[in-house]
Image (cartoon, protein in one colour):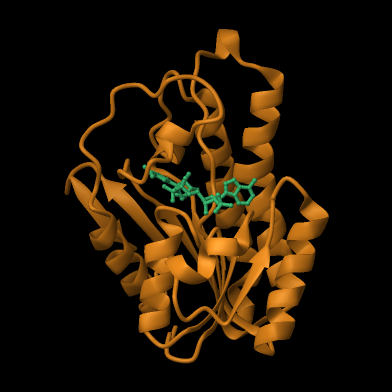
Length: 231
Ligand SMILES: NC(=O)c1ccc[n+]([C@@H]2O[C@H](COP(=O)([O-])OP(=O)(O)OC[C@H]3O[C@@H](n4cnc5c(N)ncnc54)[C@H](OP(=O)(O)O)[C@@H]3O)[C@@H](O)[C@H]2O)c1
């Protein structure tokens, strides 16, 4: 995907990953519309956004409307990035139903809805870039619900890739390891287990952009290489 001039929507543009990724996209010459739940400060965090839209993924109707509005503002869409997400911790035995519901809504149903809505607007060639997690491949005790949403999202993206291959729509499933973005501290429930040292966010963003440029399908942790690899 050529990023210069790419009409791009970033859902969760103010996040620990979303903000540096959006800034890198703007620097690469993409035309970026960003979303946040409280979009007030987004312009400061990501200078150069073409527009800022309010979006809470708990509302799937609003998610579809935000994709439509971004497409209208940009005159179509070449790239849609889903960089939003929440974490939740705790043993399955103590799983709170409301917490599970919120994790599924924000981390699985929300991204699925954004991808579905985007297909009506994506150009040929177009690209979907979605943040899943290493937990899709390596689920962890104490993080079962969060792991399940990420594994579910990864499965959704695999099936979607098969559906759109004739349309020249690329699907990049990004499954990073732990990074020090503060996601775990903002968890909606429980305490995070001890995490390894976080992967460098700037290096990660650089790899995502490379994957986008090279039309990769996955950015994943390779246990043999002990590093992130593009496929
Ligand atoms: N950080 C890690 O260690 C790590 C590892 C693997 C995968 N990931 C995944 O990477 C993605 C980004 O994580 P991050 O580290 O950047 O987390 P973060 O810094 O906490 O950012 C989370 C983003 O999600 C948005 N968000 C949260 N709840 C939302 C909702 N209800 N509706 C719409 N947007 C919502 C936030 O938007 P607001 O601006 O509105 O708050 C923010 O932009 C997530 O999918 C996460 O699961 C992260």
